[in-house]
Amino acid sequence: MNTILQSEFNVTISSGIQCFKTLKHLSPVLDDYENVINIEGTSSVVYKMEDKKTGKLYAVKIFTDGIDRTEKYSIIKDELQGLNCPYLLPIQYYEDEFFIEESYDSLSGSKKVSYPVLLMEWIEGVPIGSYLQDMVDNYFMLKMIAYRFSQFVAWITLQSFRHGNIKANNIIVREDGSFVLIDYDEFHVPYMEISEKGNNNKYSDDFPLFAILLSLKAISICPGLILESKCKDYILFEEKDFRDILNTKLVKILFPSCSEELNQLLGALLVLNSGIGLCQLSVRALHLRKPLHEITYTNDMETDDVVDFDNAWIDDCSNNQRVYYSADKSRLLMGRCKQLTNYSVKEGTRVICNMAFYRYGSGRNLKNLQLSTSVICIGEEAFRECKNLMSIKIPDGVFKIGAFAFFNCNKLESITLPKQLKRIEKYTFSKCESLKCIHIPNGVTSIETCAFEWCRNLENIELPDTIIYIGKNAFYNCYSIKEIKIPKGSMKKFDLLLPELINYFVES
Image (cartoon, rainbow, N blue to C red; front, side, top):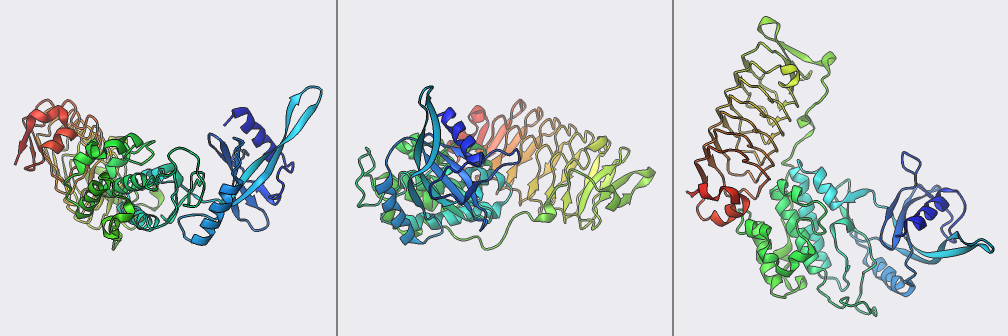
């Protein structure tokens, strides 16, 4: 959209001058800087508006390209009203609704120009890509959004219409995890007369729907893949992938999978790729099971960055060394224990908070650390630069270890990772120069960027078949590697994941 034109719209709408023919009861919603809230498109701009009497919020879309959409949106409105479903919104179209004074001649002054408007409910939420980024640590909600989208795909493939522009940015997720499809400019029902080239393809929604569903299922298994989703229209895929989706790197890595449901979707992809429409597939092929319980982090797993000393419980150790816990002793907040060499975390502790033994160099002389079996979460930088720490066994109940948690623990010779772990975060074991071997437990799906970089004495690595994603430089400058054990039959997958270390792979 023309920048000057949008600026004129903004000024007109925010000025208080009446610029709507019918929607006079709506007022613009302003942000914290007193600017109108809007979303700019190539041929339109959307404003967040409020009915002051009812408090209800609306999205007012003003079209600027001069195209007459009156008949088209009349048909779309009737179709949407008849559906009464939670995935789509009812709309109203107003011709010549928004008008502004445009200067055009020094003699004649200005003229009034009108523009058509589309009205719908304003959805408080974020595009699905942003939602996934926010939920990267919430496995339950990642599984739920995949499940809910599978329900949506099963429903929409049975409808007579097609949306025509299904993309990640057109799927808005509400706070409760439900979602709605917006942007109906390419919406089509069978009896509409369509002149645009390509709009008569009744299967045009199929690959976008399936690519997003496949992406969501893969991310629910391996949240590390979210890092690959930035700015992609179909989350983990782009439109160019549709031409040969079976030969994309991701599909090659995913298939075969340890997940029955993911294999089910990959099988459906084979059928779809042969020219069969989604509507001809069995609903079972698209349907995912609803997660039965919340296998996710709860509020008590939040890792504090600010320590409340006034309400802390203090563990007084020898020589005036102190370790601070939350009042209920469920969270180890931080240590002030520079002289401490041995420490056992109190039973009942669930969280080792961010920077717990990194602040003020409090863990610099710590050699031996015993974690209680109650611990389920280790925060970011929790043991960063504990340079004398030699070994640590992490309880099997731990299913999150934060980024940089053991960064530069350069005397750490061995570490036992927990069975519940799903992801090894970025820089977690970077510069652990004494580490000689690492066994990644079955169930871990991703190893993030630089997770083991500069582990210069690392000789032996064992990777499970559950790995789907390995970030850039995960094993950078680990130049003592002698052997990387991988499961039998997984050579092709790990060639794609770690091509620079192909010569060290040994199937076992």
